Length: 286
Image: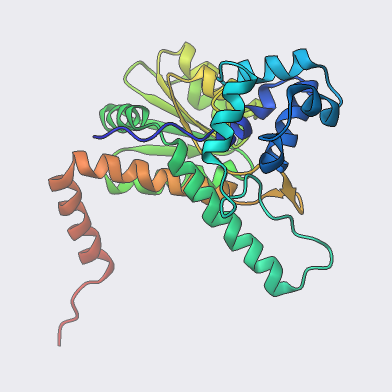
């Protein structure tokens, strides 16, 4: 499978933002909001606009994987484009329904495109192989992540993998404690910081099970805990208490994961699909 291009600098910043300290987050958010301005600013000018020191700017550049401020500006300039905004349009109180609907659909589309940009194919391959090899797969999700847990369960069933979604915190603990080295646990959390999901995945790992994380942040506690980490790239800013594009990105990633598994079991999946179609749409007899 061919390698994908490295993720963009702006997506890297957005993914690592929660792991930065408060001063570095100021820099990161300013860059995301004003990338076209930042490429023309000297380090001291950027520091002044963010209300931080030059040292903070330097630390920020190193933490996002650039060699220094000049390297950071060069990479930012190379990928900046007027038709590819770094942030999502915010739904305003005065928006009419058509405008709001357009912003929501645009956010969903952008979340899918950005998730494709950060997709790590070797990790995807490993995750697909591990899921297919597992005796059973227990899936942990809470809140919005529970929707993705149910979706993954549905997709696993279609490739012949025994999966069980758990969205109750107590059931997650019981499930995780009873797993074995032949099993696999998947933790799903947009922030990668859900206490219940983290606890369940920790217990699953202690029980010897293999672990996969699906989150929006490559440096989140959940991503760092799991043996295999898959990341989405939706936004963080909340619109009416909900991160636009987050769930769409999770389901999109699960669809890609299902496709990777189906490609490894093409004959079996084709046979299963035929049986499903026959069961759902039996021929009527006259």
